[in-house]
Image 1 (cartoon, protein in one colour):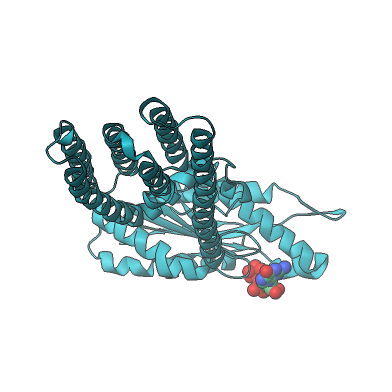
Image 2 (cartoon, protein in one colour):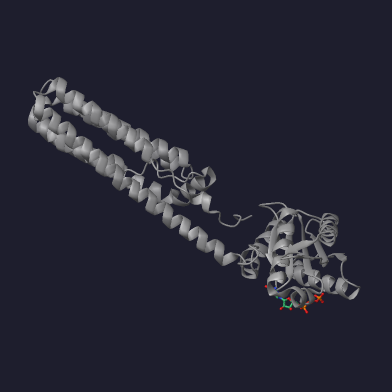
Length: 386
Ligand SMILES: Nc1nc2c(ncn2[C@@H]2O[C@H](COP(=O)(O)OP(=O)(O)OP(=O)(O)O)[C@@H](O)[C@H]2O)c(=O)[nH]1
């Protein structure tokens, strides 16, 4: 339904890849970034294709209709075709993280292979190609949005291939070749560090945003959802879902009995300890990620139970009531015993004649709770809404 309270370990980053160690967090982050990533990738692919095509002019200027001109133009055309294929894939699968990464990796592999082939076919210009190789390294790490580890592997492979070509095809030897290789290695190191910073910054910003959002929808003491989240999102979403799929929805209003006496006897800290334990019990006995546990007021909590009928709601309320009544909550040297009263209201959208009336489901549960209090407390009152 919504993430559980933010856990610091969810936000830890792996040092080499700069990805979240927690697989689900990384997945959520990538999904959150996907539209931006795809937009950047599209622009990068178009831009790089234009450059590859544009430099065909230099092939013709240098080689004229020489023996390698056809191969050079074919290499450029192959890179552009691959980029166009990747653009098509992005259009066809706009919500796939996997396809986005595949497109980035395929296009950069084709671009690197094309570049090496062009360098091999124009071996007398290796110093110019070395500048081109440096630009390629920047593009692989920083310009094309891809997984950092993939970019690292591709850029290192392209650099090694280029140095090997320079040794085989160009008259570079000894100190000159060593210097070029070292400079390209440095370009890799600096670009990797810069790309890693980007990756970390994006993830830091994402985790800060998630933590703030989590804090804005939860109660600080108990970690349960707050009332604002209930009214702004939780209830409306569940009512709409139940109405759309014709499901049952049950809400349980729970209130600790004589809580003022707990505060008077054990102090405010004792009262807080009871609230925290009660909230833990509510969360432990409901379905994680399905049911909503809300702190509705001081010592009043609301459970929102999707796809649950009246019988299920009453069973849960009875179990909660009995478990709490049998528990003793330790605080300092004392054991605090408390009970709670429950009001259970259920709506069945499959058979209801007036679904709009169910927007008053919380008021109904509150009235039932009041009836349970009046009837002596430590009990459950329930009603099926018409
Ligand atoms: N310790 C603590 N007490 C709180 C908190 N919020 C509200 N309270 C106290 O909860 C008590 C609620 O008292 P009442 O509304 O009289 O209800 P009650 O004593 O539980 O009586 P019944 O509900 O009728 O059984 C008040 O004393 C509030 O000060 C909180 O966050 N921590």
